[in-house]
Length: 305
Image (cartoon, rainbow, N blue to C red):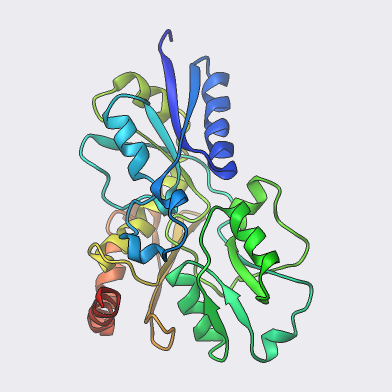
């Protein structure tokens, strides 16, 4: 127990909350820890939409490099920000028990726009496509930054509302009273879950962190991320996925939308828990075979222009 586990994190309030949560749990188990905060490129460049930055791993790259250089031992991430393929030498060491999976709309106290025209802000292709699918007469504008920055931008602009992950706002007590649960919106794969990564050759840290793993959340996020990886093939797209477990049965819902939200391919299925290994992959294949291939080709073409 003599080694100090250096925990790498982004320096936003939410990221630090997540790192301190992991730190406390490791301390409770008798481990010594230190938190090391770094700024990620995704937090620095706020004037470009995420997909222009080659979104995959923008928030995790800086920490990956710090780990590979040996400056930190483990890193804590919002799992939905983590690319489905981890860099060589870095492994998933634990998935913590999942919090709220819902997306919410934060508004300004007036919801009349839901019945007419309105302007909603989000930096997520998935949220934008699902919003336009349901509210085709609305405009969706780009919104970047950590949750505190985005909340401030919502107040500073004349938008009607902005979409956030409930978990992030709840974790740092930023959830206002003026919000609506978007229970019709399929969340991002692994939304509401935190993941801890470690170096593959670091037996001490892997063993320590493994004690924090929540197996049910690990199974559900595995399915969702497998679905995402199979559909995307390295390209960003409006994809939602949610797996839940009850009475040894997994219920899974996965969706793929066109960028404008007009086209939708979805799948809903249930299987026994013991059959979870290829559920995400098989579900994605079903969507690809039912028009998803054409949809993905169109998305790639648009994003490359």
